[in-house]
Length: 134
Image (cartoon, rainbow, N blue to C red; front, side, top):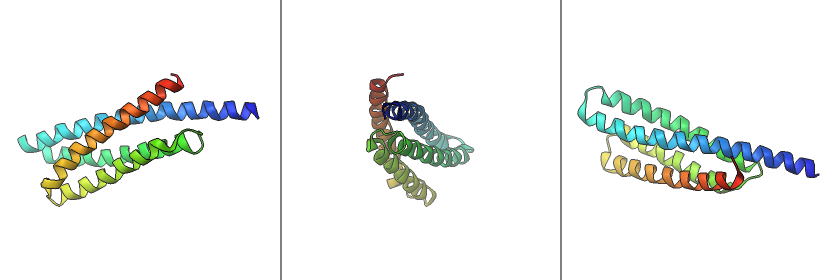
């Protein structure tokens, strides 16, 4: 029994480390999305780059959610990372739909909220990952 617990704990720590990496990537992608939003306003090719980085952001958000679920279920860790990961993905898809529809009055504030939510998730994951070890 103790060997199984130790193996499960090691598995959970590995998934928590993976979550740390994915959340850092997610926040970096959110920051890049803000940069491409500025490029959208100032250069002719900005729209294509903003759209492409938005699509990448959805994929990264999906990976974030999957890894958060793997920390919880097979990893034996906390479920507390899955809810925010799901919320970030839902808001990302909503912001993407509003952006494609040209509803910038909602799209822009949602982007700011996404960045804030990503930073909040980053601080929570880093605190938990630090407590679990390297």
